[in-house]
Each structure stands twice: as structure tokens, then as C-alpha cells.
View (tube, rainbow, N blue to C red):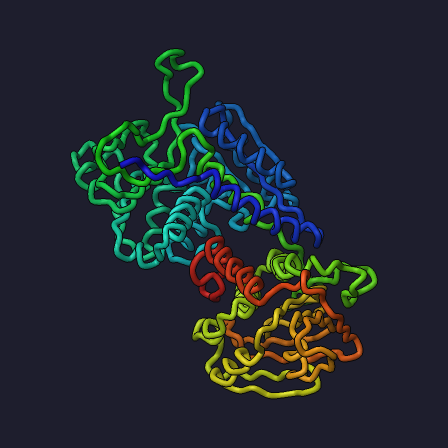
Length: 531
């Protein structure tokens, strides 16, 4: 049975497309992510990785800076390069490429990194946070491995959490930037994890352990260490390593790239093996983690205890009129409605504030997806939330989770989104002034107090609204206070061919929830994950 290849190229392109949106949102608000790489010598694997990171940064229009030191550079020269990158406000992430050389003290190098720019989590503080399950950053290569695994499982109809809980994950390789973090990420997914490397092979135990693996991650740095004889039928293999090996024809100069996993034809059941050997695979996916995922350093806020996002329009926020924005852009507006939140999050340092913004971000998409039960769950909302809503021709107070759940379900088949944010976060919660949009039938609008002519026709409703979302000290939503400016109200009929259906909108929001989970990890909105 032929192997099923996990397509790392396709996964990388999907992730790259997602990053383009995040970077565009940052750029519109005056922030440009910046990435620096630091390389000592000309190791072929490190040089290949640097070229891919540089190309990707250029494609995404991120600032890119390279510090390239000679192979005989002194430790002081390397530390000086790191110091320059730490001090440069344009640089938001630093990637130290390995190997550094036998004369360099890696521990001192990693300690010298600014923890807020150490995107590979090599600084002792970041490594400790990763080990505790509350990472500031997740190293890109192991993060890519699990992104590929999660994506493959989801696309094959398997629930990842259930699969990991019943699986044995074997990681071959114990490096600080790949093997050890992969072990921790597997444990955080509740897999049973075994760590081994070439020393396990020397002890005669490697074949015994790898043949038990449901998932095998190979990152040993030893070409040809793992072959088909090390695998059980149906295993999933993620092949990480790229090593310079001598070509049998041209010899060692120039070297070609070899992998730890040896593939050869077999006439028995084969494992899933990925990514494609000749494609960029998850190395490109790993590179894609860097420039946009680590947003630019946040400037100090002028008001202590509060971070704001100024309205980008010089004339202030305006209600969308039919002539100003084509109706056919509705679906795109829904997809992009949380970009201001992403931009504010990129400028926000305080863990409480970050948790509130992530809770808010997830809440909006859960609401749009119709997943109301998840909104009132224990990890999102306090036990007794209070909503105060002045909307349409009426005002109401909604108290308690059951009443809030009934309130959401009573909204009916209405498509909701917002734009033109004037967003702020503080210790007490979130406030925002927005243009609030609805696409709904006349009958639905009449039910909440709007005056329209045709009950079966679709209408676009837009008005300026202000809301306050208080949160408790655990960053759980305590309620919503919503107030509509009726003087700004605009109601216009929508031609049938331009209508976005509730089903279409729900699918957009469901995908957004899944992308957030894949990009930031399980429980990403909780305050204990913000460091």
C-alpha cells in the first residue's frame, strides 16, 4: 500500500495566506514586523534555512536584517550582534541559526537574547514557560510539525485531541530547538511521549521503540538513521532533519541534502510520510512562523493602564453608505472584522489585557458561528453575566447564563459584523465604538423594532454603536453593555444576488475559530496562557 504524503507545501501556503492578513492589519495601523537572523559561519543547512526565511520575509514585506559573522568570530562579537538586534526597535523577532561552532557558549548566547524577541524560545525564561505549558513563543519547527499533524488529522476526519490521547508519540532527537520542544508539545496534547536519539540506537533500543509509535517525529541530525524497518504499518511520520551528505556522483562538494528517514519501496502497508521530500515541506512552514507571528514591538501607551487603537480615518469613523462600499464586499468585511483587534493585540503586553482581547476575538467568531454554548462556558464567561442592551426601539437587561443563551438564540437568522473600530482595553475590560452591520430579512428587523417595508426582503442595517465589555480578574466576560446611536441609522435594501446568507457567514466564523486554535494552541484565550 503506497504511503500517503502529508503535503507540507499546501499547508505552508495556507498559513502564509493567513499571515498576509495579519501583517496587512498591522501595517494599516503603522506597525511593520521585523525579523533578524544571526549566523556564524556558512553551515549549509543554516544557510539554506536563512535563505528561505529571508525570501519569505521579503514576500510578506516584513523588515529583514541579517547578521553574518565569520566562522572564527569571537564570543564577544556574537554577543555584540545580539545586543544590536535587541536594541533595534524595528526588530521584533531574533532567530539565532545553529550550529554556532564549538568555541561558542550557547547557554550564554541564549541568555543574552531579549526574551520578548526570542522567537525560538531559547532564553531560559521562554524555555521554562514552554515547559510549564504557558509559552510566550513556540519554536517554529516543532510548532510546524504539530500544525501539519493537526491539519492532517482534521482533514482525514479524525478529532486531534482524541487521537493524541490514545497515541504513542516517539520523538527521535533531543535538540533544544526541535526535539525537546516537540516532546513538550506532545505532552501538552496528552499523548504518551517517548524521547530517543542516536544513543538509543547505539543501545539497540531504537527499532524496538519506533516500531511502537503511532506518530514518529524524526529530528536526529543523523542522515539515514530511520528506515522503513523502524516503522509499524499505519504510523504517521514527520521527517524534520535536513543534513549535508556527499553526493554519490559529485562527491562532497557541493553537498546535497539528506534526511534522517530513508525511503525505499515496500510491498507492505506504508505509513503516512511527510512532508514531500523534494518540496519545501514544513521547513517553509517553519519559516512562515517567524515574521508575522511575532508582531512588532509595542510602543509605550500614553495612558497608564489602558491601550487604545486610534481610528485610522482622519475624519473619524463614518457609517458605511451604499455608494461608499460595494455591497458585494459584505463577505470580505465579515472575514476582516477582527483585524483591529489583532492590531491592538500586537501592541499589548499586559497578560490580563491580552487574555481579554483574545477572549473577545474568540467570542465574536463563536457568536457569528452560532456556537453560543461555547460563549457561556466556564472558561469564557463568569457564572452570572449581566447584559444591558439598548438596540432597535427597545432596551433590556439579561442576567445569567441561561438567559444570555436564550438572548443569543433569539437573534434569529441575522448576519452580524462590525467595522470602523475605536477600540481600547484596560484592567476593567474592553470598550469599543463601532459601525455595527446587519443583513437580515424585514421580518427579523421588525421583531427588534426597526421599521422596514417588506418582511421578505433583505436589508443592510448600519449604525454607530458603543459597547463596554467588563471582565473579571481572570479575564472572564462579566457582561455586555451595548448602546446604539439611532441618529446614525442607515437601512437599505439589498439585491438578492448580493445577499450573504447566515450559513455562509457561520462558515466564515467557524473557519476563523479553527484558524485561531491552530495558530495559537488550545485554550489560547485563557489568562494562564499569556506570558
